[in-house]
Length: 305
Ligand code: UGA
Ligand code: MN
Image (cartoon, rainbow, N blue to C red; front, side, top):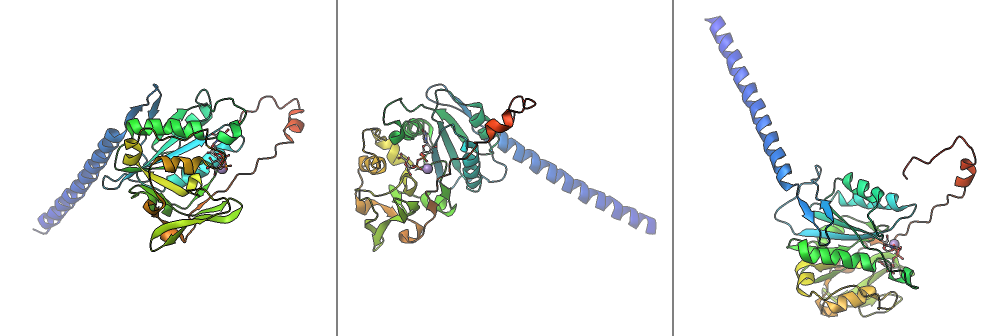
């Protein structure tokens, strides 16, 4: 009798553990299927294929708008360092689609490998800035326009579009704020225009002017505004114009969206907080490279920086 009771306990225990293991297995299987389903391949307008990867650490949610982050980037010593910093910020934000546009005739291995290892959902494009005299003044323009073309064709509403340069610093709270942009949202940008910050002036929750050293109709940096995706899709002619004077590319772009000052949506606690900084990476000094390479035992330079 005692033996029977003991044995029953054992069987019940085996049953419970077995059911639990089955339950775990089933859930893992379901999760795996979900991941496979969500791994899509987009074909960009001009035939570029970019894999949209699943991120294991941040769940995509179906009930919040998408954020399309546009980043122009170009080959330089600190490129990978800057992109790494930005990618680690973006990993903390759900429903992010990172559109990285290289200023190059062809996509580079460095950026390609970087993106595949980034665990982010990304689109990899390239568009070279034309070889004109004022090339430096129009940096980022061709690349952002290329991304806007892709966005108009493939981006999924509801969503928002933000132009994030690769060397700035972003507090992740700004992404949650911009996610719900109805038309055009704005906020302060730190360390720009020769100031501690440049910012919209807000009164009664409306933008009434700008705190700036360089007045324009919309005195904001590229890092200081976001645009509703549907609005950008609706007005198909809007683009960054190389013909705009230096420093006027942002205001020229926003003006084309047909909004007035009073239409702007002030974020970051009515524009009283700085959540984005226009930091600029110092050009690295590699002057001693030639010294070490005089050593004949140093053959090639195999480590990608
Ligand atoms: C300032 C503004 O803050 C930028 O938003 C604006 O794009 C730029 O000036 C401008 O005048 O157009 P700044 O830090 O001086 O930014 O510019 P960079 O960060 O050097 O370049 C802006 C973006 O374009 C970066 O993402 C950068 O990687 C990219 N870029 C730069 C290129 O794609 N090609 C280049 O030759 C140079
Ligand atoms: Mn910059």
